[in-house]
Image (cartoon, rainbow, N blue to C red; front, side):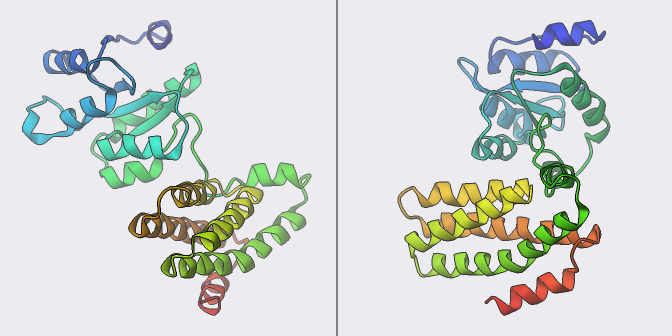
Length: 253
């Protein structure tokens, strides 16, 4: 289907039956972008990408933009793609307009720092937003005052729950960890803070596995980082003062 979409819009494209075939094509031909299926026989997309990015592998263009294509939607699956060196992520079934958006964007960003690329793109077709004000406004019937009130409550309460989560983590209180992160996940979903919601989901997921303090700490740190991005954005938008967030954070310790 992807090949047909590309041909329809006048692009030249090759296909590969597996990761090994893809590597062979990249060695023989020059391409502007790679759409890498994650699940392939013999060699999957993750392994193929690692080889492409490996300076010792001798690939002609180790920095070529690579976009993952997969039906998986879990944040952990997306993270595997980025850890392997992929630049973006598009969900299957692929929609033509989303595919074209990727083609227009990435060839011009080949030389961008890898860490910047990873921050800019998660799921190209359905990119999690730090804060989706439009979505929240729809929920509140377009009432700006209600939207602002909801966000102010979140600014006041979220720092407390995040600090409580961190304390529970250090005390290895798994029950409290689950309770705190469940609250954070619900609050962030309510205000359309999707990246914070996803980060909370990841803490909740690993908290349900055999206890691994380092793993929990890593996920909790990411959650706190996403919260700081959220409040910085809200400050830039004039919804909340950044100083208020910092004070609430200090007081909640």
